[in-house]
Image (tube, rainbow, N blue to C red; front, side, top):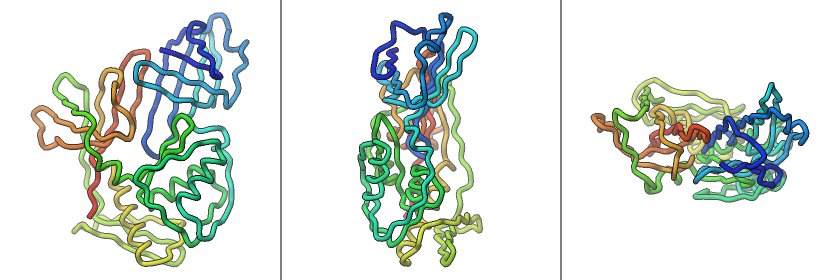
Length: 302
C-alpha cells in the first residue's frame, strides 16, 4: 500500500492499521477512512488540517486525490477521514439562471470547485429557468441530474457526468461467477408501476405498469413543455426503481472492478438471476485485501 500526503510519499514513515475506501457511481462522493498506529504522536507533529491532500493506492485500487475532512487522535492511533469533494462543496448558494444549458451549468460547478469536467453519453439541453436556493452545488446538481436521467462521479479532481441509461447499456467488462463459496445477497422487490411528478403549477404521470403502486415526487425544476414533463417523470420513475433488483457480493481486493462499470453475473443453481449488473458502490478494505461490491440490475424503461 502506498500513502501520499500533500503530494509526498510517506509510506515508509507510517504504519497503516486500517484503510477503507468507498467508491460510488452516483449520489455520493467517494470517501476514505484510514487509521495509523501512532505511538510516537507523529501525526500531531505534522499538524494536518482540513482540505490537505491525501491519496492511497494498492494494486489497481486507487483512492485518487482526496481532501482531509476529519482528524481524530487517539491512544497510539490516529484516524483520518477524507472525501473526493473539496471543502468548498459544503458551501450553500442561491442563484438563478435563464436559458442555460446542462453542460454550461456542469462546467460552472466544476470550475468553481477546481475540478475538470468529463462527460459520457450526456445529451445537452437548454433550460428555460433554473433556481438554486440555499443549497450546495453538488446536491443541487444531483437533483437536476435525477430528472434528466444523468448522474455524476467526483474522482481524482474530476467531475464525471454521465447518462445512466448510456452507461448501463455498454458491454460487460467482466464475467462474475458466484457459487456456494461466495458470500452474496440478491433481492427483488416490487417495482413502482408509475411515477407522478409535480411542481407548484404542473403535474404529470408516467405509468407503464398495471398496478396502483404509484410514486409521487415534488420537483423544483420549471416544466417548460409536455415533453419536459414526460422526460422528467420517466427519469424519476427509473431512478426510484433502480435498487428494486440489487445485491452485493464479496471478493478479493477488487482487481478490475470499478464503480460505474457493467459486469455479467452468473449464479450457480439460480440462473434466473443471471444477466448484466451495474456496480454502483464498492467498499475496498486495503488492509484485509477484500472488497464488497454493491450492484443493481439495469432498469429498462420503454
